[in-house]
Image (cartoon, rainbow, N blue to C red):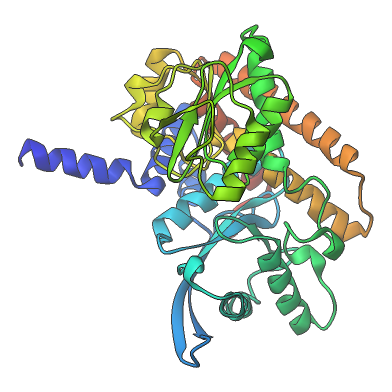
Length: 426
Protein backbone atom coordinates (compact mmCIF):
# COMPACT_ATOMS: atom_id res chain seq x y z
CA UNK A 1 0.00 0.00 0.00
CA UNK A 2 1.39 3.39 -0.96
CA UNK A 3 2.28 6.00 1.68
CA UNK A 4 -0.19 8.42 0.10
CA UNK A 5 -3.02 5.91 0.39
CA UNK A 6 -2.18 5.15 4.02
CA UNK A 7 -2.24 8.89 4.75
CA UNK A 8 -5.60 9.22 2.99
CA UNK A 9 -7.10 6.41 5.07
CA UNK A 10 -5.70 7.95 8.27
CA UNK A 11 -7.22 11.31 7.34
CA UNK A 12 -10.64 9.76 6.61
CA UNK A 13 -10.61 7.98 9.98
CA UNK A 14 -9.41 11.06 11.82
CA UNK A 15 -12.24 13.15 10.36
CA UNK A 16 -14.88 10.62 11.43
CA UNK A 17 -16.35 11.93 14.70
CA UNK A 18 -17.74 8.54 15.69
CA UNK A 19 -14.32 6.91 15.39
CA UNK A 20 -12.73 9.73 17.42
CA UNK A 21 -15.34 9.27 20.14
CA UNK A 22 -14.94 5.48 20.15
CA UNK A 23 -11.14 5.62 20.37
CA UNK A 24 -11.43 7.83 23.46
CA UNK A 25 -14.11 5.56 24.92
CA UNK A 26 -11.93 2.50 24.36
CA UNK A 27 -8.91 4.11 26.02
CA UNK A 28 -10.92 5.20 29.06
CA UNK A 29 -12.64 1.80 29.35
CA UNK A 30 -9.27 0.06 29.26
CA UNK A 31 -7.83 2.30 31.99
CA UNK A 32 -10.92 1.63 34.13
CA UNK A 33 -10.64 -2.13 33.55
CA UNK A 34 -14.29 -1.96 32.55
CA UNK A 35 -16.11 -5.28 32.82
CA UNK A 36 -16.33 -6.85 29.32
CA UNK A 37 -20.11 -7.25 29.55
CA UNK A 38 -20.56 -3.59 30.50
CA UNK A 39 -18.16 -2.62 27.72
CA UNK A 40 -20.22 -4.56 25.17
CA UNK A 41 -23.43 -2.81 26.27
CA UNK A 42 -22.07 0.73 26.65
CA UNK A 43 -20.12 0.96 23.41
CA UNK A 44 -23.23 0.75 21.21
CA UNK A 45 -26.39 2.89 21.05
CA UNK A 46 -29.61 1.60 22.53
CA UNK A 47 -31.59 2.50 19.42
CA UNK A 48 -31.05 4.06 16.00
CA UNK A 49 -33.99 5.36 13.98
CA UNK A 50 -33.94 6.33 10.33
CA UNK A 51 -37.06 7.98 8.99
CA UNK A 52 -38.20 9.31 5.64
CA UNK A 53 -40.08 12.59 5.82
CA UNK A 54 -42.47 13.45 2.96
CA UNK A 55 -42.92 17.23 2.93
CA UNK A 56 -45.14 19.34 0.71
CA UNK A 57 -43.03 22.15 -0.65
CA UNK A 58 -44.33 25.60 -1.55
CA UNK A 59 -44.37 24.54 -5.21
CA UNK A 60 -47.00 21.92 -4.36
CA UNK A 61 -44.63 19.02 -5.00
CA UNK A 62 -43.64 16.46 -2.37
CA UNK A 63 -39.96 16.20 -1.36
CA UNK A 64 -38.81 13.30 0.81
CA UNK A 65 -36.13 14.15 3.38
CA UNK A 66 -34.03 11.67 5.33
CA UNK A 67 -33.88 12.00 9.11
CA UNK A 68 -32.28 10.24 12.07
CA UNK A 69 -32.65 9.90 15.83
CA UNK A 70 -30.04 7.97 17.79
CA UNK A 71 -30.78 7.16 21.45
CA UNK A 72 -27.48 6.13 22.97
CA UNK A 73 -28.16 5.32 26.61
CA UNK A 74 -30.98 5.29 29.18
CA UNK A 75 -29.09 4.04 32.26
CA UNK A 76 -29.28 7.35 34.15
CA UNK A 77 -32.62 8.66 32.85
CA UNK A 78 -34.40 9.77 29.68
CA UNK A 79 -32.27 10.38 26.61
CA UNK A 80 -31.42 14.02 25.87
CA UNK A 81 -29.99 15.72 22.81
CA UNK A 82 -30.44 18.24 20.05
CA UNK A 83 -31.82 18.08 16.52
CA UNK A 84 -29.79 19.59 13.69
CA UNK A 85 -30.76 20.50 10.13
CA UNK A 86 -27.91 20.45 7.61
CA UNK A 87 -26.95 19.05 4.20
CA UNK A 88 -23.96 17.43 5.97
CA UNK A 89 -25.94 15.40 8.53
CA UNK A 90 -24.93 11.73 8.50
CA UNK A 91 -25.46 8.74 10.76
CA UNK A 92 -21.85 8.58 12.03
CA UNK A 93 -22.04 12.22 13.14
CA UNK A 94 -25.38 11.61 14.89
CA UNK A 95 -24.05 8.46 16.59
CA UNK A 96 -21.02 10.34 17.89
CA UNK A 97 -23.07 13.29 19.12
CA UNK A 98 -25.54 10.98 20.89
CA UNK A 99 -22.70 9.22 22.71
CA UNK A 100 -21.08 12.55 23.59
CA UNK A 101 -24.38 13.59 25.17
CA UNK A 102 -24.33 10.48 27.37
CA UNK A 103 -20.83 11.28 28.61
CA UNK A 104 -21.59 15.02 28.89
CA UNK A 105 -24.65 14.45 31.08
CA UNK A 106 -22.66 12.06 33.27
CA UNK A 107 -19.72 14.47 33.67
CA UNK A 108 -22.02 17.20 35.04
CA UNK A 109 -24.10 14.59 36.95
CA UNK A 110 -27.35 15.38 35.16
CA UNK A 111 -29.83 12.42 35.22
CA UNK A 112 -30.12 12.01 31.46
CA UNK A 113 -28.70 9.68 28.85
CA UNK A 114 -27.62 10.82 25.41
CA UNK A 115 -29.47 11.20 22.13
CA UNK A 116 -29.15 13.20 18.92
CA UNK A 117 -31.22 13.78 15.84
CA UNK A 118 -30.91 15.38 12.45
CA UNK A 119 -32.43 15.85 9.02
CA UNK A 120 -30.47 16.03 5.79
CA UNK A 121 -31.71 19.30 4.31
CA UNK A 122 -30.60 22.83 3.48
CA UNK A 123 -32.70 25.02 5.77
CA UNK A 124 -31.28 28.18 4.18
CA UNK A 125 -33.07 27.25 0.96
CA UNK A 126 -36.41 26.47 2.62
CA UNK A 127 -39.32 28.75 3.53
CA UNK A 128 -40.71 28.95 7.04
CA UNK A 129 -43.76 26.97 5.91
CA UNK A 130 -41.61 24.20 4.42
CA UNK A 131 -39.54 23.99 7.60
CA UNK A 132 -42.68 23.77 9.74
CA UNK A 133 -44.23 21.00 7.63
CA UNK A 134 -40.97 19.03 7.58
CA UNK A 135 -40.48 19.45 11.34
CA UNK A 136 -44.01 18.37 12.20
CA UNK A 137 -43.81 15.27 10.00
CA UNK A 138 -40.43 14.37 11.52
CA UNK A 139 -41.90 14.80 15.01
CA UNK A 140 -44.88 12.62 14.11
CA UNK A 141 -42.51 9.84 12.98
CA UNK A 142 -40.83 9.98 16.41
CA UNK A 143 -44.01 10.08 18.54
CA UNK A 144 -43.54 6.59 19.96
CA UNK A 145 -39.91 7.23 20.84
CA UNK A 146 -39.81 10.71 22.40
CA UNK A 147 -41.48 12.14 25.49
CA UNK A 148 -40.66 13.59 28.92
CA UNK A 149 -39.87 10.11 30.31
CA UNK A 150 -38.26 8.75 27.12
CA UNK A 151 -36.24 11.21 25.04
CA UNK A 152 -36.26 15.01 25.26
CA UNK A 153 -35.03 16.82 22.10
CA UNK A 154 -33.54 20.32 22.04
CA UNK A 155 -32.28 22.84 19.45
CA UNK A 156 -28.96 22.37 17.71
CA UNK A 157 -27.40 23.52 14.44
CA UNK A 158 -29.98 25.43 12.33
CA UNK A 159 -32.85 24.73 14.74
CA UNK A 160 -34.21 27.06 17.41
CA UNK A 161 -37.02 27.76 19.86
CA UNK A 162 -39.55 27.93 17.01
CA UNK A 163 -38.55 24.44 15.88
CA UNK A 164 -39.03 23.19 19.44
CA UNK A 165 -42.45 24.88 19.67
CA UNK A 166 -43.58 23.02 16.52
CA UNK A 167 -42.39 19.70 17.94
CA UNK A 168 -44.06 20.39 21.29
CA UNK A 169 -47.33 21.30 19.58
CA UNK A 170 -47.27 18.25 17.29
CA UNK A 171 -46.62 15.93 20.25
CA UNK A 172 -49.28 17.69 22.35
CA UNK A 173 -51.93 17.42 19.62
CA UNK A 174 -51.48 13.64 19.56
CA UNK A 175 -51.40 13.45 23.37
CA UNK A 176 -54.58 15.61 23.52
CA UNK A 177 -53.08 17.83 26.19
CA UNK A 178 -50.14 20.24 26.42
CA UNK A 179 -46.87 18.45 27.10
CA UNK A 180 -44.27 21.19 27.35
CA UNK A 181 -41.63 18.90 28.92
CA UNK A 182 -41.27 16.92 25.66
CA UNK A 183 -38.58 19.34 24.43
CA UNK A 184 -36.31 21.99 25.89
CA UNK A 185 -35.04 25.21 24.38
CA UNK A 186 -38.61 26.47 23.94
CA UNK A 187 -39.82 30.10 24.07
CA UNK A 188 -40.13 31.23 27.69
CA UNK A 189 -43.89 31.74 27.33
CA UNK A 190 -44.29 28.09 26.30
CA UNK A 191 -42.38 26.69 29.26
CA UNK A 192 -38.82 27.62 28.35
CA UNK A 193 -36.27 28.47 30.99
CA UNK A 194 -34.77 31.87 31.61
CA UNK A 195 -31.04 31.78 30.93
CA UNK A 196 -31.30 28.89 28.45
CA UNK A 197 -30.16 30.87 25.39
CA UNK A 198 -26.93 32.01 27.09
CA UNK A 199 -26.33 28.77 29.01
CA UNK A 200 -23.65 27.17 26.83
CA UNK A 201 -21.70 30.42 26.56
CA UNK A 202 -22.09 31.08 30.28
CA UNK A 203 -20.86 27.58 31.08
CA UNK A 204 -17.78 28.27 28.97
CA UNK A 205 -17.15 31.49 30.90
CA UNK A 206 -17.39 29.57 34.19
CA UNK A 207 -14.88 26.86 33.24
CA UNK A 208 -12.50 29.36 31.61
CA UNK A 209 -12.60 31.40 34.83
CA UNK A 210 -11.85 28.28 36.89
CA UNK A 211 -8.94 27.37 34.60
CA UNK A 212 -7.57 30.91 34.89
CA UNK A 213 -7.65 30.57 38.69
CA UNK A 214 -5.90 27.20 38.46
CA UNK A 215 -3.03 28.73 36.49
CA UNK A 216 -3.06 32.04 38.40
CA UNK A 217 -3.99 34.09 35.32
CA UNK A 218 -5.81 37.38 35.92
CA UNK A 219 -8.66 38.10 33.48
CA UNK A 220 -7.25 41.46 32.31
CA UNK A 221 -3.99 39.79 31.26
CA UNK A 222 -5.59 36.67 29.77
CA UNK A 223 -5.83 36.76 25.98
CA UNK A 224 -8.77 34.81 24.56
CA UNK A 225 -9.47 33.73 20.97
CA UNK A 226 -12.93 32.48 20.01
CA UNK A 227 -13.60 30.53 16.83
CA UNK A 228 -17.27 30.98 16.01
CA UNK A 229 -19.75 33.77 16.67
CA UNK A 230 -23.10 32.01 16.79
CA UNK A 231 -25.20 31.10 19.79
CA UNK A 232 -22.20 29.50 21.52
CA UNK A 233 -19.16 31.45 20.30
CA UNK A 234 -20.79 34.87 20.12
CA UNK A 235 -22.36 34.66 23.56
CA UNK A 236 -19.19 33.17 25.07
CA UNK A 237 -17.08 35.97 23.56
CA UNK A 238 -19.46 38.61 24.90
CA UNK A 239 -19.64 37.12 28.41
CA UNK A 240 -15.88 36.58 28.59
CA UNK A 241 -15.33 40.18 27.44
CA UNK A 242 -17.80 41.48 30.05
CA UNK A 243 -15.97 39.46 32.73
CA UNK A 244 -12.79 41.42 31.99
CA UNK A 245 -10.89 38.96 29.79
CA UNK A 246 -9.08 40.35 26.74
CA UNK A 247 -10.69 38.84 23.64
CA UNK A 248 -8.11 39.31 20.88
CA UNK A 249 -9.68 37.23 18.10
CA UNK A 250 -13.09 36.07 16.89
CA UNK A 251 -14.41 34.58 13.67
CA UNK A 252 -17.44 33.53 11.69
CA UNK A 253 -17.75 31.10 8.79
CA UNK A 254 -16.05 33.56 6.41
CA UNK A 255 -12.99 34.29 8.58
CA UNK A 256 -11.95 36.27 11.61
CA UNK A 257 -10.51 39.47 13.04
CA UNK A 258 -7.56 39.94 15.36
CA UNK A 259 -6.21 42.72 17.55
CA UNK A 260 -3.50 41.81 20.11
CA UNK A 261 -4.61 44.75 22.30
CA UNK A 262 -8.15 43.38 22.49
CA UNK A 263 -11.38 43.72 20.50
CA UNK A 264 -14.52 45.63 21.42
CA UNK A 265 -16.70 42.54 21.26
CA UNK A 266 -20.13 44.21 21.61
CA UNK A 267 -19.35 46.46 18.63
CA UNK A 268 -17.86 43.58 16.63
CA UNK A 269 -20.99 41.48 17.13
CA UNK A 270 -23.22 44.42 16.17
CA UNK A 271 -21.16 44.84 13.01
CA UNK A 272 -21.55 41.12 12.26
CA UNK A 273 -25.32 41.30 12.78
CA UNK A 274 -25.63 44.34 10.50
CA UNK A 275 -23.33 43.17 7.68
CA UNK A 276 -23.30 39.35 8.15
CA UNK A 277 -19.51 39.48 8.21
CA UNK A 278 -16.60 40.85 10.22
CA UNK A 279 -15.27 42.32 6.96
CA UNK A 280 -14.74 46.08 7.35
CA UNK A 281 -14.71 46.11 11.16
CA UNK A 282 -12.25 48.84 12.17
CA UNK A 283 -9.22 48.47 14.38
CA UNK A 284 -8.53 44.83 13.58
CA UNK A 285 -6.72 42.77 10.99
CA UNK A 286 -8.41 40.04 9.00
CA UNK A 287 -7.31 36.44 9.53
CA UNK A 288 -8.53 33.16 8.11
CA UNK A 289 -10.23 30.59 10.33
CA UNK A 290 -7.15 28.37 10.19
CA UNK A 291 -4.88 31.30 11.13
CA UNK A 292 -7.21 32.24 13.98
CA UNK A 293 -6.68 28.86 15.67
CA UNK A 294 -2.92 29.40 15.61
CA UNK A 295 -2.88 32.91 17.11
CA UNK A 296 -0.75 33.57 20.17
CA UNK A 297 -3.18 33.51 23.10
CA UNK A 298 -3.75 32.14 26.58
CA UNK A 299 -7.20 30.61 26.02
CA UNK A 300 -8.55 29.22 22.74
CA UNK A 301 -12.28 28.52 22.48
CA UNK A 302 -13.17 26.55 19.32
CA UNK A 303 -16.94 27.05 19.20
CA UNK A 304 -17.74 26.39 15.54
CA UNK A 305 -17.92 22.75 14.45
CA UNK A 306 -16.18 19.37 14.54
CA UNK A 307 -12.65 18.49 13.44
CA UNK A 308 -11.05 21.95 13.61
CA UNK A 309 -7.94 20.87 15.54
CA UNK A 310 -6.30 17.87 13.91
CA UNK A 311 -2.93 16.16 13.70
CA UNK A 312 -2.18 18.60 10.86
CA UNK A 313 -2.41 21.82 12.90
CA UNK A 314 -2.27 20.84 16.61
CA UNK A 315 1.50 21.33 16.74
CA UNK A 316 1.06 25.00 15.77
CA UNK A 317 -1.40 25.92 18.52
CA UNK A 318 0.01 28.51 20.94
CA UNK A 319 -2.68 28.58 23.63
CA UNK A 320 -2.20 27.48 27.23
CA UNK A 321 -5.84 26.47 27.76
CA UNK A 322 -8.16 24.90 25.17
CA UNK A 323 -11.84 25.22 26.13
CA UNK A 324 -13.95 23.29 23.63
CA UNK A 325 -17.19 25.15 22.95
CA UNK A 326 -18.16 22.98 19.96
CA UNK A 327 -18.83 19.26 20.03
CA UNK A 328 -15.79 17.32 18.83
CA UNK A 329 -13.64 20.26 17.67
CA UNK A 330 -10.47 18.23 18.34
CA UNK A 331 -9.79 14.88 16.72
CA UNK A 332 -8.48 11.94 18.73
CA UNK A 333 -5.28 11.99 16.68
CA UNK A 334 -4.57 15.54 17.93
CA UNK A 335 -4.97 14.67 21.63
CA UNK A 336 -1.47 13.27 22.11
CA UNK A 337 0.07 16.35 20.46
CA UNK A 338 -1.83 18.72 22.76
CA UNK A 339 -0.86 16.66 25.81
CA UNK A 340 2.80 16.67 24.78
CA UNK A 341 2.68 20.45 24.28
CA UNK A 342 1.32 20.90 27.81
CA UNK A 343 -1.96 22.49 26.70
CA UNK A 344 -4.63 22.19 29.40
CA UNK A 345 -7.75 20.89 27.66
CA UNK A 346 -11.24 21.53 29.03
CA UNK A 347 -12.96 18.84 26.95
CA UNK A 348 -16.22 19.46 25.14
CA UNK A 349 -18.17 17.07 27.36
CA UNK A 350 -17.54 19.49 30.22
CA UNK A 351 -16.81 22.84 28.57
CA UNK A 352 -20.04 23.10 26.59
CA UNK A 353 -22.26 21.27 29.09
CA UNK A 354 -23.89 24.50 30.29
CA UNK A 355 -26.56 24.05 27.61
CA UNK A 356 -27.66 20.58 28.67
CA UNK A 357 -27.45 21.58 32.35
CA UNK A 358 -29.96 24.40 31.87
CA UNK A 359 -32.00 22.14 29.57
CA UNK A 360 -32.25 19.83 32.56
CA UNK A 361 -33.35 22.78 34.68
CA UNK A 362 -36.01 23.59 32.05
CA UNK A 363 -37.28 20.00 32.07
CA UNK A 364 -37.47 20.08 35.87
CA UNK A 365 -39.37 23.39 35.83
CA UNK A 366 -41.82 22.11 33.19
CA UNK A 367 -42.52 18.96 35.17
CA UNK A 368 -43.29 20.82 38.38
CA UNK A 369 -45.01 23.77 36.70
CA UNK A 370 -42.95 26.32 38.60
CA UNK A 371 -40.34 28.54 36.98
CA UNK A 372 -37.19 30.09 38.43
CA UNK A 373 -35.78 33.60 38.18
CA UNK A 374 -32.81 33.95 35.83
CA UNK A 375 -30.41 34.64 38.69
CA UNK A 376 -31.46 31.34 40.29
CA UNK A 377 -30.84 29.48 37.02
CA UNK A 378 -27.41 31.10 36.65
CA UNK A 379 -26.47 30.41 40.27
CA UNK A 380 -27.36 26.73 39.93
CA UNK A 381 -25.47 26.54 36.64
CA UNK A 382 -22.44 28.08 38.35
CA UNK A 383 -22.60 25.52 41.16
CA UNK A 384 -22.88 22.61 38.72
CA UNK A 385 -20.08 23.71 36.38
CA UNK A 386 -17.62 24.59 39.15
CA UNK A 387 -18.25 21.30 40.97
CA UNK A 388 -17.86 19.37 37.70
CA UNK A 389 -14.63 21.20 36.80
CA UNK A 390 -13.18 20.37 40.23
CA UNK A 391 -14.34 16.73 39.97
CA UNK A 392 -12.57 16.45 36.61
CA UNK A 393 -9.30 17.94 37.86
CA UNK A 394 -9.30 15.69 40.93
CA UNK A 395 -10.00 12.64 38.77
CA UNK A 396 -7.18 13.53 36.35
CA UNK A 397 -4.74 14.02 39.22
CA UNK A 398 -5.82 10.84 41.01
CA UNK A 399 -5.41 8.66 37.91
CA UNK A 400 -2.41 10.52 36.42
CA UNK A 401 -4.14 11.04 33.08
CA UNK A 402 -4.89 14.03 30.87
CA UNK A 403 -8.18 15.87 31.36
CA UNK A 404 -9.78 14.46 28.20
CA UNK A 405 -9.16 10.89 29.30
CA UNK A 406 -10.24 11.80 32.84
CA UNK A 407 -13.55 13.21 31.57
CA UNK A 408 -14.32 10.00 29.69
CA UNK A 409 -13.24 7.84 32.62
CA UNK A 410 -15.40 9.83 35.04
CA UNK A 411 -18.43 9.69 32.72
CA UNK A 412 -18.05 5.99 31.90
CA UNK A 413 -17.53 5.17 35.57
CA UNK A 414 -20.82 6.87 36.50
CA UNK A 415 -22.82 5.29 33.65
CA UNK A 416 -21.25 1.88 34.34
CA UNK A 417 -22.18 2.09 38.03
CA UNK A 418 -25.84 2.80 37.21
CA UNK A 419 -25.90 0.07 34.56
CA UNK A 420 -24.36 -2.43 36.97
CA UNK A 421 -26.78 -1.54 39.77
CA UNK A 422 -29.83 -1.77 37.50
CA UNK A 423 -28.56 -5.00 35.94
CA UNK A 424 -28.64 -5.97 32.29
CA UNK A 425 -32.02 -7.35 31.21
CA UNK A 426 -30.87 -10.02 28.78
